[in-house]
Image (cartoon, rainbow, N blue to C red; front, side):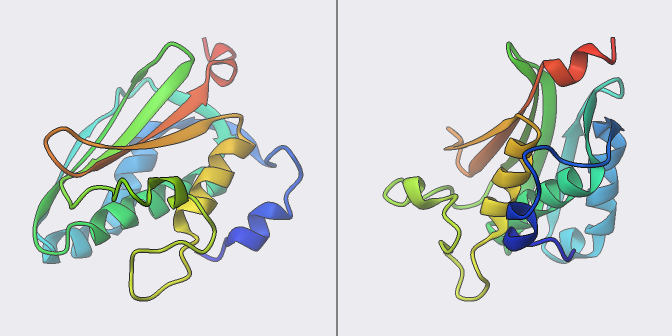
Length: 168
């Protein structure tokens, strides 16, 4: 993936190439493309996305955002874990949650989580979550992060209801 923070910032206030995307095959395709890493890290994946779930979006931007979130989840579970990706109709739109069984979010650093140069890794530029947030916000959505009660972290994306009304 070659999209980076600079590429996203240079976009206008609306993404180009909007089309109707089915979330289930999109997420399944991302997981399939990462299958060798999932296997080598002994990570099981549970997908619960209704096949009827669709959003209007730029597929390149949304795919890039989701790949960044899944890769962050994999980084949090280097030696075994569970990745759960679910979606549902929320009060303001479609919600998609990517949850891992990793170490969770350091609550002392949670306010920096989406900062462009923040990273908890020894390498990398720390732009993955910033890029993901920017891509989601360009679609009128939002992304929230929290620690899961049973351990690990969850990132929830809300795609606005306006994008769904035309599909009905």
